Image (cartoon, rainbow, N blue to C red; front, side, top):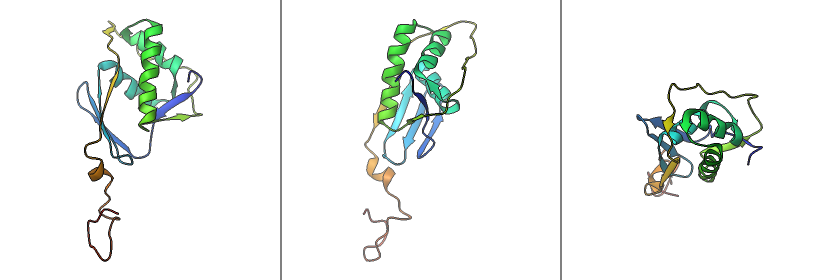
Length: 143
């Protein structure tokens, strides 16, 4: 994983940030997500802007947060694997030569990034009422 680059999936993912929380929806899978902890919000915001590798991301976490490189790498890898498994991010050949996050006046306390998955509305989210129409049964009809 350390030689791969990752970025936010540009297809079928919508989201919004509310303070120190991000809500995402995967319109293809039908799941929605809550990204909590400032480290997770920081990671997601980077992934939306830049393709980044695990070593680059880990280093950025050590600059922004009060965390050592080993812990940053381990927790970032777990979080990236979660995001990949939910198709929220994709691996890419794109990369940036050097990523340097802004250096804060004071490092933030570190808490491991969290991704909470909700699948209770899958049937409604993946239902496409414009295209899921049966001529005999009418609309909306789940195919």
